[in-house]
Image 1 (cartoon, rainbow, N blue to C red):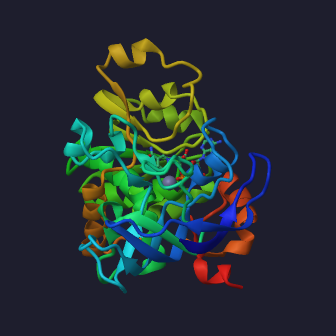
Image 2: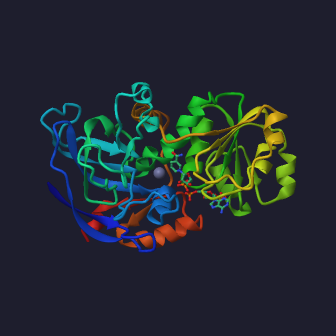
Image 3: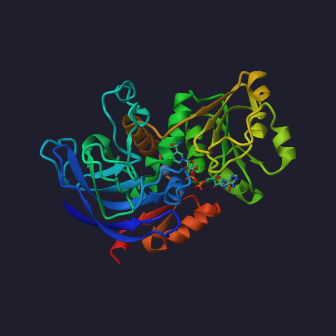
Amino acid sequence: MYTAIGYAAQSSTAPLAPMTFQRRALRPDDVAIEILYCGVCHSDLHQARNEWGIAVYPLMPGHEIVGRVTAVGEKAGKYTVGDLVGVGCMVDSCRQCEACHKDLEQYCLEGPTMTYATPDRVDGSNTMGGYSSSIVVSEAFVLRMPEGLDLPSAAPILCAGITTYSPLKHHGVGPGHKVGVLGMGGLGHMGIKFAKALGAEVTVFTRSQAKADEARRQGADQVIVSTDPAQMREAAGRFDFLLDTIPVQHDLNPYLETLKFDGVHILVGLIEPIEPPVHAANLVLKRRVVAGSLIGGIAETQEVLDFCAEHGITCDIEMLDIRHINEAFERMHKGDVKYRFVIDMATLKA
Ligand code: NDP
Ligand code: ZN
């Protein structure tokens, strides 16, 4: 066993606080990783506060993990001590079902083991995420960090990056397509970069005029202030795809009306239930689709890391001292982060 330290919530109303705990002894296919950086995703906040009703406490968030291999199990051959590696949202799956065979472990028919707050498949213990000094993971769920990527700003690729890249690829987004990105936060700003890199024309829907110039700097061709009904009406029938990263319940109907016929509105936020309801006419009369998407498989996560290295894509980050994690959650809740906090794990030792 490895003694580790990290920040965890003990209940849905408690702030994150330091905690000492044990990481498992290496199984034959495991690698042990010293964590250097970990991104702060809005899902971490949803889970710490049990907003999805599935939290297990103590809850140690963190699924945008970059670190260095410190030990390898006796049958693990993919990595050697010293390698720079990443761990994203999943640490295991059944590895046998149709989805797993298709490299879609996130849709594992038995349910994937998430990086935190899920029972481990072997010993049933509650998984603990990357707001910590170290982690032990099967090498099959470990990614190689490509050379040339700045490590702190690459960490969010492991969730914010893959979650936006995967649906754009799946739906064949490319040249000639008009893509709208809803919400310019951690996921949204990566969605802009990927849609542009894939050749699409990109419009950002943001609540505030203040973010309009920022959105253009991120590469957006156009900006729509979603709180202005006139701008929303003017955009009617314009888009092929919408990538919706808004983390709270919202009315999809005004957005659906901005899609062309056959347009696809892709949800990544778990906004249960969709409220107010989607008008059937907004779908039926234009053959539009409301779709969902969950992160991406391990092979595709490696693909997006390599894609980012090739295209010089990284996240815009604010480095965070882990002692300020609770303030960071508050700022993320208010939409006040450009555009991802990344914890410098060296601050854990302080
Ligand atoms: P952020 O908080 O970084 O960004 C969300 C953005 O949405 C904000 O910057 C803001 O953009 C907009 N927004 C925030 N609050 C509201 C509101 N009340 N009404 C309208 N718009 C709002 O979150 P993330 O990018 O980290 O995550 C986005 C969502 O995606 C979360 O719900 C998260 O859980 C989910 N997620 C889903 C994954 C999946 O696999 N499906 C994986 C990872 C995350 P602006 O100020 O421009 O309006
Ligand atoms: Zn995430």
